[in-house]
Image 1 (tube, rainbow, N blue to C red):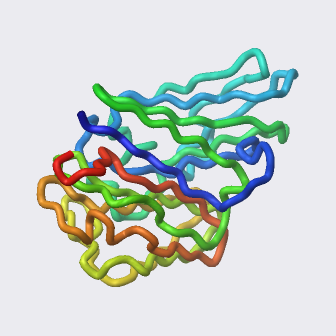
Image 2 (tube, rainbow, N blue to C red):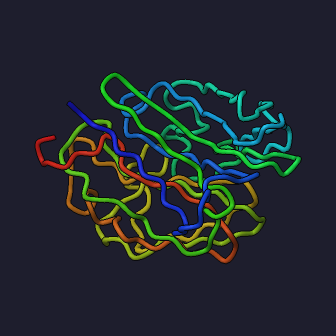
Amino acid sequence: MRKLFLLIVVLFSFIGHAQLSDLHYLPPLKQGQNRQGIDQQAIYLSTPEPTTFTVNAYRGTNATPIATFNISNVTPATYTLGRGDNNITLVDNANTGVVLNNSGLRFESPSGNRFYVNYRGNSAAQAASLTSKGRVAMGQNFKWGGVPNLGTHPSKSNTLGIMATEDNTTITLSGYDAGCEFRVGNNRAGITDNSVTITLDANESFVFETYIGNNRTQAHEDGWIGASIVSDRDIVISNGSINFGRQAGA
């Protein structure tokens, strides 16, 4: 049975209630094969606040909310997303390795009330849960964390999603194995340089994928671990392995 391991990496913080914020980002990610790692998806909003307040959801750089919710401690909300590669939370090949202005989500409370955001996804034999850390997740220096993703399967990949919070943000990914290749569109080896620098405006995003599939190499299994993501303005990231396998035969 395949298992999914999805990990969010944020600024390390041990402040209590660090996941409670008036602003949350969910950068998009990439699975190796549509609907095989993650199919059905929903986002759950909740708060300890007793008084009802409004939360707006924005897609990419769109300044108009795509959804609005009224929540309190007795009335949480659920936002159901399109299945599989909806190009909001999970992007397809065409939207991988390029600057995106219509992917990723931002949840904001105009009143400043604080709330939780939890993303959940599942497919036939596996599930994932990812909780946004709010404003404490913003930073300028991150590491691509994880563990070796062993084995082969058409949907097996490793992914990093980045969203900018300010215009004209320069971001550099470096420190990965020289054999690591990153997808650009249908070309799984579209980026082969030893470092990658991109520029994003506020709420734009960029998704990296090291695709394993049925032709694994050690560089794609573990060469991305510990890569540095450095920016000159605050960004947020998510990263992990989809259809993670801890054994070569998994």
